[in-house]
Image (cartoon, rainbow, N blue to C red):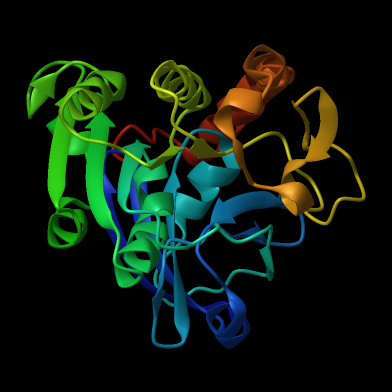
Length: 278
């Protein structure tokens, strides 16, 4: 149970795992996530399910803090102590018509099972993927097979359009009638994607990533304000309508423990050595 059957490097500091767990494979639906604990003294961290292969679920992880660095250092054949899930409400998959999917960073991985399910329903998919540079735009092959139109944006112009994902969104809005949007990526990206969709009067779903502990709604750490009401991302989400989210509050909450997170990572690097190669 929970054996890492495959590990691949997708980009600097970004790894694609296949983790054996028949329960997750049997019950997981697009948009859901798991909470993992690598070992007895490890932090619990939420990871979105990026697909299934055989008896394994797929998880794409970016090393940003101590726990994710530790996970990205795990070897094939090793086991993860705890995997709880599938958690959260699945995506609302249906036939909508013209669907825009916008992904940034490891959020691209979250979009893949959603895209596959939407395509199976007969939707036409317009996909915008973005990254800092060409090497950070992941899963191009998979999305190329699914997308009716694929637009790539990079901050430095090394691949596709020089710009950000909202530039790609604008191009599509100008020439296509879009019926609904999904956007997954860094919080600030999803905020501006929500603003762009609202500007064009189109509903947008976003997948939120607030601080989370138990993943079952008991701790209250993942609370977010949606339509002026408190919601818990782990049980009411993780997907919410983007124009109803209090983005400024969410951004402040995400930065709440930044100093402690930086200190924890610093101590970990002192213990294990330089990790710039990861």
